[in-house]
Image 1 (tube, rainbow, N blue to C red):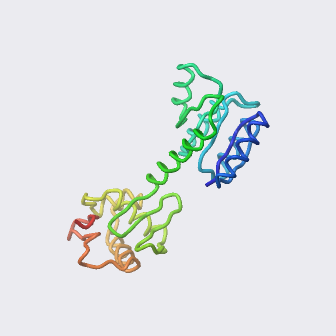
Image 2: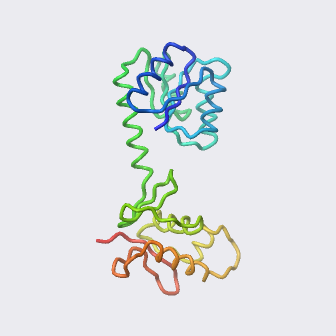
Image 3: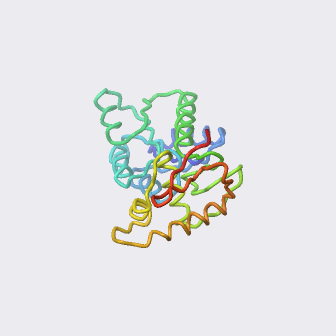
Length: 222
């Protein structure tokens, strides 16, 4: 797991880096807001520890810019700003947590673990034996990764997200193919056959059931 620390006080930044690396995390540091924003936008980081008062760009503005780009990376403010109004402002800007300086390093580590745990839970979708790891774009069945094409992946993901609902062929063409005019929906059947073959699904499981003349429905096994 990779952590971005955006902190202008070099002593604090180095202390956090050393401690977090001893905990097994990969750490990258930025000492000003603009550099932190650039790293957040261009590198895959799993969590951001963000100071509020920073050179070149305030932490609150960094947070807002990250959320404007619809990046979901958890952001934890580490700051001496401690009024209720400032806390609310930080959370409204898109921060996930708020830790006031001075803080306990042990508490920080536990907060980080909680956010990683929550992210991992939100990262996995399942359908019976099938799991989709969203952040890694992986499809796993029986603990083995299965290679799907981009379109096959999108179709499977759509059905799992709509688990328990009948997805008509027209809905799939509109939502997955992004085609909003009359189109031969028979192409969906071709992709479904390929998905079933690659996943080696048993007919008895009925994980993805064909509704004749309508579409498909994904259901967990009872």
